[in-house]
Length: 162
Image (cartoon, rainbow, N blue to C red):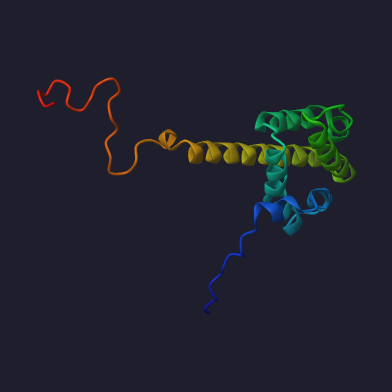
């Protein structure tokens, strides 16, 4: 039996992912395993990371929020005055947490929510690392085929060549 080659679905842009209905993805992804959960941890996490990155939220703030969810629960985290810094980010994240609270059943649901927040934090970190490497070519090491120059000495120092 020969199977047809599998092709990946076309990629989605940051703008498309940022427009995802993340509260709905949380409700369905936390309620049902399978494709809904896959979508939550895939496109949903990337879309959330894009939104938070555009608002300047640091990954550590989202990772800390995951710890709060683990220790206090999703409802507790949703009721925090400022679950992440910034008014606009607070409104977005609070909507996510309130949506998750309706679907997160018990400790398992809260653990899934915390894991999702950790995934978002990791994706934010990757975005920051990528951006820093793109903006600073020396951060990734010497260019291929070139030896790095020693600092403080010219190439001809000590060789007698001017």
